[in-house]
Image 1 (cartoon, rainbow, N blue to C red):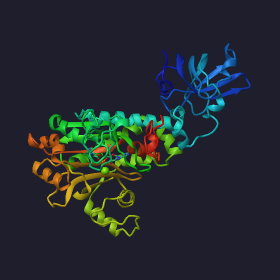
Image 2: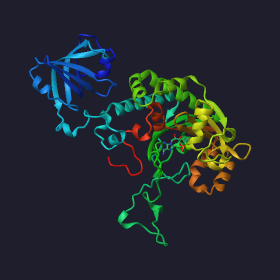
Image 3: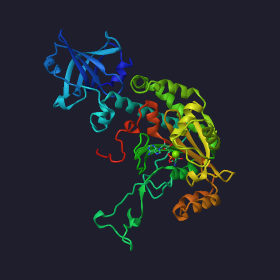
Image 4: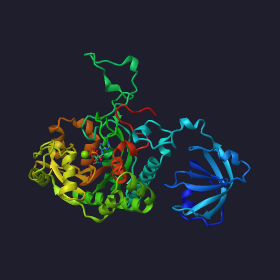
Length: 464
Ligand code: 4AD
Ligand code: MG
């Protein structure tokens, strides 16, 4: 059996041992003295390992034809490296070629550095690049750390449905799921398409959030979280929006807004520490090549207490700061990313929890405050990215919830299963949603959420 390259480079195997590695060639260099140097990577860590191949091998001819992307099995002795930068290398005894690159001219990896946009179009190439390999490992590290964080605190992971009838955010940004015969669509009397029998006799959509289902389970299991794909038919083309993205949504019974603001802070600090400890190699690459402060800002983040500010006070700060914004600020408007970034980057110079927003710009399920004008909502806004978390205390009082549904023109019948939670042992509860790609984009310094998900889905991109 073979061993992961990371185990060799991290010194987990004794020098002098015979080892087998399997991976792909990154580069090959031949010396005049009849030695071929292969850099082999297998995705387990940032660096490739060097295999030193002497011309005494009977397939040495073949070895000198290897190009970037070829797959190989190398058996040899692990030795301390003489060269700079590398700790260990392999003195090869056999090199078996498993897969050739048919035409090296059509495998454009070695020749030049590719633009990130080019890579989005070339699925087979993308994960083999340094940059996407590093993103992929950091993303994995973050997912594992998130699961660990909740697991250690007794949260139960719930898989909420992808197909649903409810528009959690009420923003009308749902993708329709249909079993209808497209050639023969049912029509209403007026001639419009009749979608009422869309999904085996009922209307259905792809979920925009697992929250409402999460509330059902937190009302029995006390502390739950979801971690899964969510979908938004947002017709926007920005570096922060995807049509398919992953969300982490804890939902906690007997918790108020301050409790989940504290949970959000603990969680972010926990996962940032995990990345700093476990993915130094990749983070050093990001700091060198993508975002100078990639490491230092995470270290900073872990050290600092989050700032907390009420929406109403935030509006005063923005109005009085003397800065010209593209979108003017007035009490009652939703904060734009330029406002959020000003607060986090210039005013507080720290991640900020903005709390108690006007009820008219927020979803129906948020708990109304005593003032009758605001709801117990929060957004966590980070320097350098803006909103990464949105959450709230939920309205647990049936009469207040019903009044709100009515006020917003929503049909009580559609939410009867949700209203039931308020009828049978209702409790105060709160939760939030973390946009996972925004988190990965922030940690890596990658400017665009498309480049931190394996197969980005945005307007007009679903080719593979
Ligand atoms: O603020 P949002 O819309 O909140 C909810 O969906 C709540 N139901 C969550 C909850 O309380 N359980 O979305 C939550 C987060 C945002 O802060 C943002 O980070 C991310 O999801 N997000 C997106 N990420 C990528 N692409 C999109 N189109 C996104 N829309 C939201
Ligand atoms: Mg939001």
